[in-house]
Length: 327
Ligand code: AQP
Image 1 (spheres, rainbow, N blue to C red):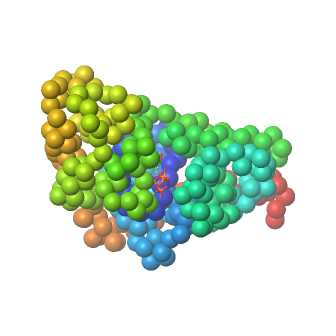
Image 2 (image 1 turned 135 degrees about the vertical axis):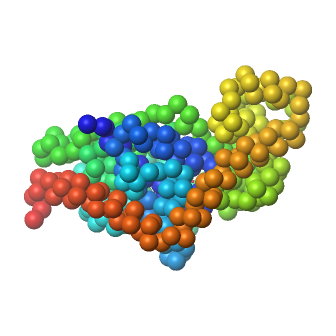
Image 3 (image 1 turned 135 degrees about the horizontal axis):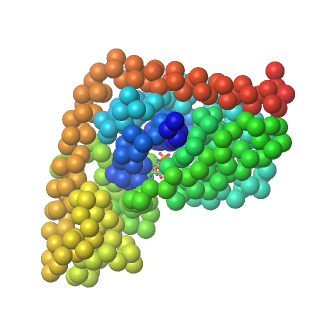
């Protein structure tokens, strides 16, 4: 029996190379080793302001893009979170078993609240309970997590352990799946902040569906510094970020890269990054256009994913409901 992996991504904007390198690429590479459940977490997306029509479109775009990146429906179930009612239903039961203090410690809420001061809603605060529900519903063994999600996974583990102790065995306790190259990609305009799909800043992110001209323009404008050497120095945030992006896309070692750019300027570095990113994204973009124009195929894949996911989710939810005495 393969171990089960669960992961999700929010359709909150156009997918960035940060999402690709930090999450999607790893999902694709891992998928043959595990039983995989991947979810477009659109219910999480509404914790920040969304235009309903655009959200709907981004949800299907995201599903098509995941397939274009290599998520294989024969190996992985892919579905849309809001299509399975057990997600918010279990989140409610979990809510009633999470102490306020534990939830208040979640640092991502503080970050997101700072970024959205006009819309600090209860859902944003409660996001980790819905995420715990997503994971626990599927009796998940492993969750691929980046640095910023570690705390949420810990909360999911805590609530599962408490629930099993207080009401009886119900949930598998999920473990983090730490991947080697889970790089955190920073904004090209500001290398001190994470590259994010919902950022509105110009030249902040490279999107997976950007044209070669857009990619070239954004890398050209990327923040560097006034030094001359091109070396992996985390203190020189702009250059370090570009080198990390180049490292993953080019699959070269750090020594090879430093050798390649010895006595060279940032112009060459930016040209080489542009080349390798354009070359990598080109087949993904071609595949995306094909999949996105075949609505029937996309809906078939999502339905098939939903059916498989629903049968597991319903079983877990029913058990949790019975254990707490709900009819
Ligand atoms: N810059 C990044 N570098 C590496 N990994 C990243 N991820 C996101 N940004 C980077 C990873 O992508 C996955 C999907 O994340 P999400 O959609 O659930 O939300 P997020 O982490 O909040 O992603 P964004 O792009 O920053 O979205 P918004 O702008 O809506 O907040 C996660 O595995 C995440 O680690």
